[in-house]
Image (cartoon, rainbow over all chains, first blue to last red; front, side, top):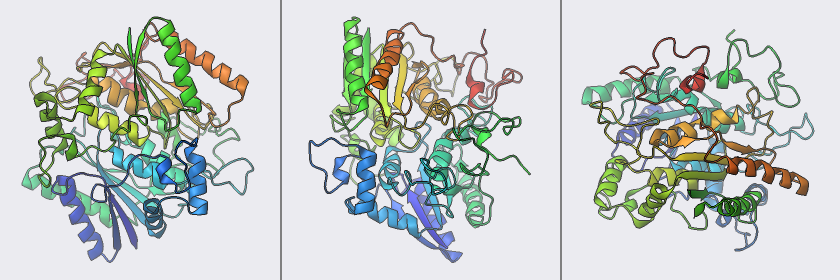
Length: 260
Length: 260
């Protein structure tokens, strides 16, 4: 299968860099083809602005989503954007690896989402079955692909757990798993979190590799997060969850299908 | 009072730009002093890397948090970082205005968090009362300041509400409100969300101005979100919420003090 590995760490000689090298080798040994987007090494342009479009005139009013739609559909987007879209189209699975900075992705990775996921492709795609609605939440253009976030955190599993002072890391990652991946149709697996990443012993490192290997081996067989789809019948015409479907869930968890 | 207005929209002639101008004038008319960080106009460098430190040698291994600590404490950080820190120190309130892109802040704003909120100041500040712990979640260096996120979204209040298909916008903003502002000690007010922002009539615009005016007038008197503090006694030594304190809350809401 085809795997796109997006790497957003400034230092290849880091824990993250070592794990990336280990993982790519393991995926290739399993017969997968891997392409990388090493954002720091590529000097990826993080900031979405008028320079992203060859026909943008300096000083002209910019509506980014409108320019993005035209850029994608008419080919006026910059080649760095097109190249990343081509990788995404090619991929069966997208793995996104980053250190957690301020409870989210580093700016360079946010800028990859902002610029690559163009209007007319990743959002603002008309829903053929429902006038005035666009395809979102499981039904977007990238449907059929799998996603996996891999992130390293300084905190412990307890402090970033369901009762932790930091907030549950999987809730912190919901805006990415659900709001970026699932929004566009990519089905994310539960994120792989590497805790206590600031101090890792050699034995600890081996254990982290073993844990990561299990996730890589399950990339195409593990169950994705069972998010509800926008058009699967659970939401009303105003996109509110129909009464009673939440069961005893609350918060983000209301967007999960009940266990069957 | 002193207000820092951080603005992260590429187009001053946008809805957001108009609201920013309206808001700054209103704050000044009320006697406040306002400084701005207009990130696009400043051409703010979004990507955190070795170039942020005058003593970083190209090709030398970079551990960003370590370099950030040294940069802040020894003055080896770049002047653009120091200038923003000075504005933050000066401010009694920080207002951060941005369009919601992919359920989070634009990359240029994420890069402002990543670069400005230095180690040794905004994080990794030793807790004088507890060996091995750092000051976080209400107890950080920026304690005493207030924060307010203002964001524009394309979706409706229903689709981004508690039962909405998009997920509750206030949960999506938790990583910023709690993980960035509250983490460093800033007490955030509930975010001000402008819905259906892609199509606004002239009368709709007046209504949006009126709604924003109310929030600006309450900037120093409205109640901040009642987050628990790390060191207020609600968490055990592993930073797990003590049994029973959650009441009937779940998810991010467990980090709120119960209503009294």
